[in-house]
Image (cartoon, rainbow, N blue to C red; front, side, top):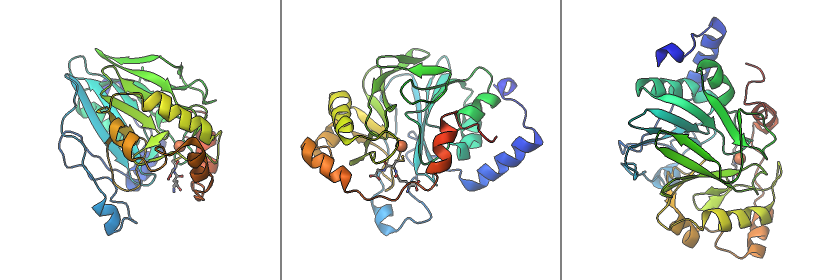
Length: 291
Ligand SMILES: N[C@@H](CCC(=O)N[C@@H](CSS)C(=O)NCC(=O)O)C(=O)O
Ligand SMILES: [Fe+2]
């Protein structure tokens, strides 16, 4: 694997050091000691709200890791076929590129595709830089995202790695180009920002539309089996995983009627993501604008 990771130039090394200093949090779904949510501003309530993800992948022959980037509270997911070693990465963050590539290398994986669930507004993706460092890696994002990538995804597309695959379900509403990625056996759903644990993505910027989001979640995610595990792109309270059944019953926004949901979404009054002005343009070109 080391032969396909390009050598670091002095510029890349300096960037890597900066990034390493800014965030390097890793958690594992297998070791049961995952510690997300321990952000600098995390108080006792945040710590108390922490939950732990399942110890084992529910799917035979599937390697699964949930990784966390502290500054944007983003989850990156690594999935691989344990036999063929083919792997994919979901929502990797620029700040944690070295951590992610190190893990891929250590586990002897052949990373085939790095996919973004949407054009993120709060952080810069590492897919562009990762492609420069890993020969053969392809980037992927929805064709409705407006972003460039090697693979433009549509409803029903399959992202394969070894004998496993994820199926694309388009879930517009947070942005036009949001997708959920569902494992072949429907035991795992990577919901991006469309469905968060006991929440959902905001709809007040990019192409946000509350009505669209409500329909997307109800038609594309809540139709999955109750026991399907929900892995979102973010959690701000240290929660790591939910299920479709739980969210269908307990999500405080999406259990409401459409009218009530729209009212809730119109009154969130959240501050804009701090990095929105730089993140969106960068992510439209895979995050490689200034590297
Ligand atoms: N404080 C963060 C941004 C937090 C935020 O707006 N999160 C988004 C997902 S990232 S586009 C969101 O949809 N949140 C929904 C919610 O209810 O919190 C920052 O400054 O980056
Ligand atoms: Fe987002």
